[in-house]
Length: 310
Ligand SMILES: NC(=O)c1ccc[n+]([C@@H]2O[C@H](COP(=O)([O-])OP(=O)(O)OC[C@H]3O[C@@H](n4cnc5c(N)ncnc54)[C@H](OP(=O)(O)O)[C@@H]3O)[C@@H](O)[C@H]2O)c1
Image (cartoon, rainbow, N blue to C red):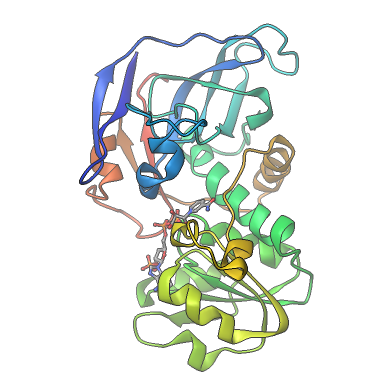
């Protein structure tokens, strides 16, 4: 099958298209014929892309851990799905990804594809929506009526953080560039701060929760806008290696979750949640997409690889 692999990681990650053996589903596994896969450029430098679970160097990883497609084969013991089912999902970070014609995943990592969505739209959902869901509801237990500040409101994760928080009854302030301010406000942010012209910590204070999808100085300055007892959650990888207990506590990495994906499917099918595909690219264009070198059409949302199999 055709796949895209990480062929070099230093000094910068290099991806290339390759012909690799088509995998088959082992016991308890599912083989997916991938129609579309989401692009998360930062994934190339994350620990699991470069290491195996037992800490050994990992080579030729296939990136792209969210996908939409059809079940091609079921391993022994998989009962809840059938060959031909349209599914979408998010795979474990240590497993090979979906920037390929086929990928192996676990039944617990997939759910029914939202029917209203195209495969390109469906592949733009899992990482962004699950990260927002787990950050807001599992990590900081956002409550209705609370004031949430979302950093990176126009990003692939931020768009879901704003929408899920609004559906939950929270008030949302978001940071974004000026060009995306109207978009972010339409998503439900009652106030949008242009990070290029305004220091957010000079115009917002006493928030209950900060959801940080930016990191660095933005993350550091966020402690100061929390009310007493306020909570902060960050997904920016620069917090990953920290020894600071408070930062360690704030950082988390999204995990596959079938039940949450199924609930997200329902919200998408009911038209209560929206997804935004910025650009679709071919498998051959995937390396450029990871290098952020493809022309963006919207300037927000996700870039999606279309395998061409469909
Ligand atoms: N820990 C996890 O589990 C996890 C999961 C997914 C992603 N991530 C990480 O989370 C981050 C965001 O991911 P993503 O997929 O949403 O990225 P993305 O789609 O590239 O979006 C990033 C957004 O950040 C905005 N931005 C840049 N600088 C900013 C600033 N100083 N203040 C406020 N907003 C700013 C940009 O806004 P404009 O376009 O308006 O300029 C852009 O919309 C990445 O670092 C990614 O690696 C972590």
